[in-house]
Image (cartoon, rainbow, N blue to C red):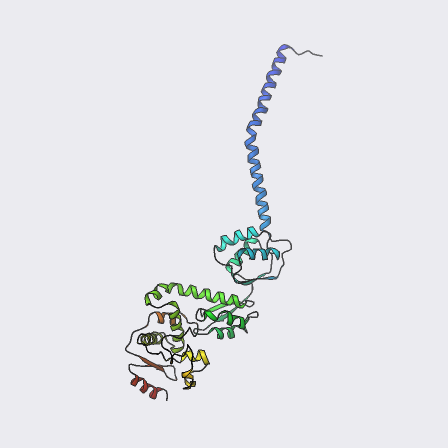
Length: 344
């Protein structure tokens, strides 16, 4: 065996020292690398976990319809969706819903889920009221009463309860905006009420300043506008009749409009009897002064604008002939002459 020389041993010691320093260096410099690697792995793991929670459950019920009721909270909707296997995580669904919809209330609707979709896609649909059910196009004419709206909708919407609707919107006569709507065939009465009332609020908002400047309340403007819808057909006549009626109120004269009897009795002017005109009712504008107790229908923007901005004129009376043409009069004598001339 060859015995190492003293010089060789010294060289080995030096080499060993260099190797030890190298190991020490790697140990010290490797800690940040290990921390970075751990952070990256943690991010990857968390991202994968969140992605998994966002994915639809394996047992997603294809073709199921979920009903969201009026006034439902975000928490109650997320629990419903969780229980129905539409989403995996309530927290992630609620987070997505707040990002998409903000503080807006959940839209009451029936939602059809034909295919599995992510939690955020579910949140987007519910926040925007995208039901996934084919819509029915329905036009609500200006001036139509809540009862007539119910009669119009009932045969076209399979799950619409007209009796429930009429009772529910009793205090909202005048505040369901007449418009063209696209209702889902399975929409319920509460959904229709919310959609139409929300549309009213949206349409009336730009007029808030003008209503305040008019000196009348919103309620009075809507009552007057509902009368104008029945009493006049053209935009010009609505504004003129508005001026006449507001003037009569300011003078303490009864309005003596026949339109309220259509709301009360379903009778046209030509069908009214002297007994009808004596009817004790807050809607009888022959017995009572001022506006009737409430709106007699749901007015559109043209009538609302006419109620806010009446056209001044010297007239105190008017009547509509058999062709719908309105004839105005300054005095009662002129009015009687118009009756003889145009209503015989």
